[in-house]
Length: 211
Image (cartoon, rainbow, N blue to C red; front, side, top):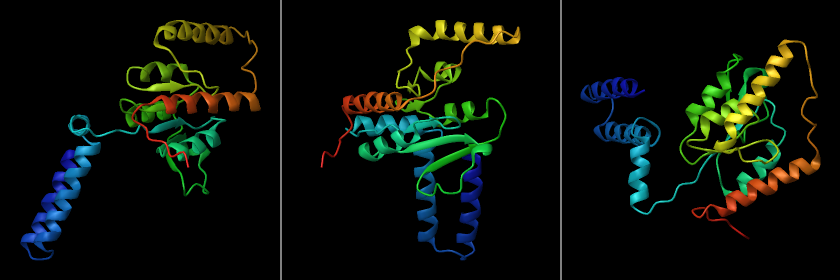
């Protein structure tokens, strides 16, 4: 990404030297690309630390493992209340055209494609919503991870949960099928919303508009 921007800027500089664009335009393009790189690129964490040292406040973003997420409406409602960005990550099989007011990221249908994109999108302090225990285990070092039912995954429980998941997978390979997870109820959705809302309210750096 850095090399790509360098090539772009070199091309823009060549245009400026050829008098095809103004010097001021070149400076604005340079400034824009430097800001992008500082915020989102290689220097992102250093940029965040600099702002924090100056008393700046960060708002986490919410990243949703959206392929089979049953609480998207609850997430959207809370994000609007707390003025947070939400990124929904889903496979192309779940593409929807009527989502102009939402930020959706689509990935290929390979097994781990959505998990890898979520890991790459997330930064320290972000909130992730997923029912995937394996994905949760990869994110706990930097994110708070909620299940679809509102439980917060805890690092000390990950080993046991992963072992139980592997045990169930082995049983299925032997042709032994137990009961699946219970269907989501309205009470489950309400519990999820209450738990996520309480968590967001407890974040000291969030200013909530009570009007």
